[in-house]
Amino acid sequence: MKKTFFYLASAVLLAACSQNPETETLSEDNSTTTVSARRSCPSEEIRAELLKRDAGARERYANIEAVANSFQGKVLADGTVDIPVVVNVLYKTSAENISDARIAEQIAILNADFGGTNTDASKIPTEFSGVKAGDTKVRFHLVKTVRKATTKTKWGTNDAMKKSSTGGIDATTPNSYFNLWIVGNMGGILGYATFPESSGLWNDGVVIAAPYFGKTGATAPYNLGRTATHEVGHYLNLRHIWGDASCGNDLVADTPTQTGANYGKPTYPLYNTCSGTSRSVMFMNYMDYVDDAAMFMFSAGQKVRAQSVLTSTGARSGLRVY
Ligand code: ARG
Ligand code: ZN
Ligand code: CA
Image (cartoon, rainbow, N blue to C red; front, side, top):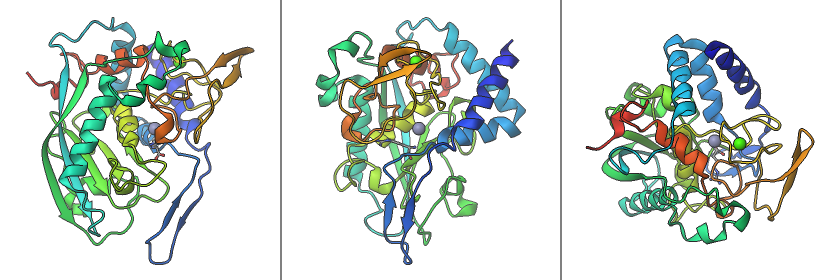
């Protein structure tokens, strides 16, 4: 039964990530990048690859989902979980050597977004205010920043930045610290994440391209620190809200099924029809692909899912601060 679910789910995932063709320009000297307005989803692609080759990860994945589906959403036993963060900065130019102030700003954005205290939470439509997460009871605090100069101008999604032997920075004990890497440029990719079945592995964590990290000096329309909010959502087991398929399933009941990803700054209300039912979709959710200024909420169901990996027996229990 579990197995059947897994094979079905992975088939969906494997099929999903190639849907958004992406245009990307990189000039001769590697200095300019035009990021397509259509976002792309390397996190699910990376998960699918891991599950394909690693039986242990497949088993952890099945267990995480079993726990997520039975978790009742009680407040975590020790109240709020304050996740310790290690920021690893790989820089070629001084602009890529993100300042301590901008790192603090990004941590503050994560705390506001996960705490439901983001100022734009006031824009949540009345229709969705009953299912908003409010405070997810997840917080973040910076433990240390590791910096390393590099000659590399462009990074991919092959995790090279996570190993010193490939020019990166080794993760600091990924079982007990949330590792975040900042790299100068990943072409059209703003960032990517590993899901909880990667918990504690050498490559576990989130990568963000410097122009989309923090706020001050970041590049519009991805300059409100929400790439980190979105990727940390994945790190805590949240799926894309459209389920990476046409009318797909994000395994969260209170996020309305939608036909696909949304981009830019959609106007509310936006209706989609799936299986003959028309619904107003929650494009303002952090797990959609809209611009930073157009996303400002998690749902109550997403909160429960994220919390379930942080309980004392959850896949990411190593992050709990006692
Ligand atoms: N992994 C996605 C990408 O690279 C992140 C999208 C985040 N969206 C945002 N508005 N910041 O495109
Ligand atoms: Zn994503
Ligand atoms: Ca849903």
